[in-house]
Image (cartoon, rainbow, N blue to C red; front, side):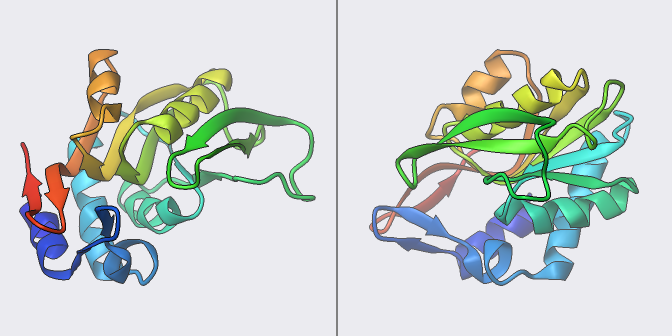
Length: 191
């Protein structure tokens, strides 16, 4: 999506360790009108799939998922990274390994919010190695629901997550795919 690629090039920054920072519009300060355009594009890509729920993981995916859900006219469910007092024992659970934080943690979704017969679109801000996305797929399948596909804002295509999911037959639609990036050479996008 050219609009997103241009925004990444003009407003994104490559930080220490060659980490892409897009917190000025995507996941810290949120450009709501821009995220609505991303949601519109996800709707265009998945509009014929009978989606009745959108699933994401807290926290960065929530804003994108909500604005996408407006275009689908459906609710958003988000997996929590910590089990809180208001989520009871009846939950679906999956493990996620965070490469950023170098640790594993469980995500949970109440069984009240995912059901057999649901057709679920996963929305997230980044896809790199695929741990979070695989965990969300597991939660959906554990509920007996159908994971229709994933809408990813930015895919780090130089890492294996997207390739492995596509090779397994899972549909992944990424709006911007980065083939390489470094502070020295900048960002190179791939189709």
